[in-house]
Length: 216
Image 1: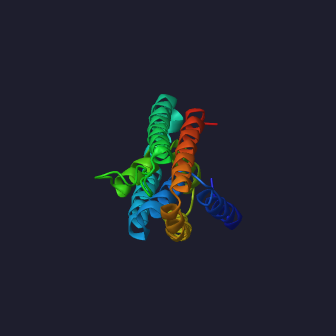
Image 2 (image 1 turned 120 degrees about the vertical axis):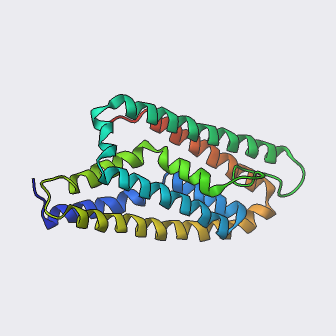
Image 3 (image 1 turned 135 degrees about the vertical axis):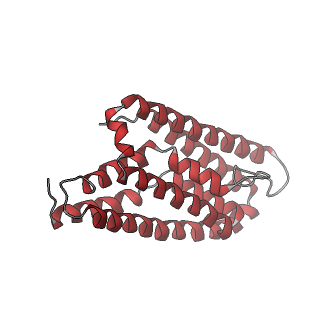
């Protein structure tokens, strides 16, 4: 089976579109940046880049293709990812509620502010425990490393570079936007608490969506 330039262009456009879709990765990075600043936001972004790179390597070597041949593996990963996102969401909701009730300014906290928290590690786990991301890399990369394709390595490198560049630009915008919001969060305690709770609800929603994901 061979692929032409039209097929490659279609996959490139699809790659850009999917990367720019809002998801738990981007929401988490923006939350960290708004609570702890640009440097911490970039630590979270680095965790996402590493997770994406691992998924791309798994796809290139065909390991991620096991999800198609062994649906039980996919379902185990799917529910583990959903549980992890829901757990983060409940922590954020709890922090938002506590921040709303307190009378002191700027005490609302979220997972990115907890003592000893590690944005890099949390973002890495979010990236790896996201069945949507794995299925994305399977569908976009396995087809270009198939034995019948003329230049599998070149296509993989091109698409991989596009994914990472788009992610870098997109997350950078979110990080600096989040940092700009930080001043508003610090001045308005209830706004900060509401924002934290809203992100928590979003993470629970992501978890529910992943729990209902299928291989189709």
